[in-house]
Image: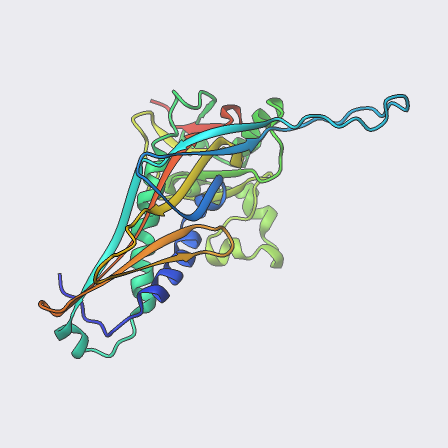
Length: 298
């Protein structure tokens, strides 16, 4: 496929792509992550950890402030996914256009990588991994449902900090039309609901629409919980010291530590620049009680 674009800087595109990826796929910011710019071998295991909730105790003047051992659970994540997105520019294309397509490339690359990563992660949201679920038809999905799910987590003693809820477009649409939410948020401070269609937090949950949420053969329409339910580890591919005519860079998002490897090669015989963005990653289930699946009735 041909492109109509001018010369672009692959590293700049990759940096912008990372920002766009994380903005368009906020799920990657809600789960537990272990990101690094270090390289790994495919199928290598990365040992990361999650911290389980602790308890407070009554002070005893005889024993004083005795520290408790924190329950830090090691989780092994296998780097068994390798995804990339790329493009090519020929000399003819480069010489016939002066359009700066940095942001356009960033959007395409970010969406392609983000969609692939999130699709792979969604495959874990199944009954075999997370047995707790709420079965509700779209017509009955409302703020009351969100409250009920919150109560379920409360009864499992799941912390109420950082709770999220991802639902497909139909169920997100149902919440947007919820009259109780509309009346509660019809204020200047929350006018964003009406103007942009973005919901504020609902009963302590950050509610996010994910249009591509798969049913996984189990009528899945959403899930809710906290970050310790899912763990993602990501690294970049290992490369030899001599990469020939390919320039390889690693671009890292400073906030999350997520890194993408940028490969930039120019074929002098064909007069074509080839650029790809790639990363290697894997997922593991964490604390299973902290996540509640949302399904539709059969």
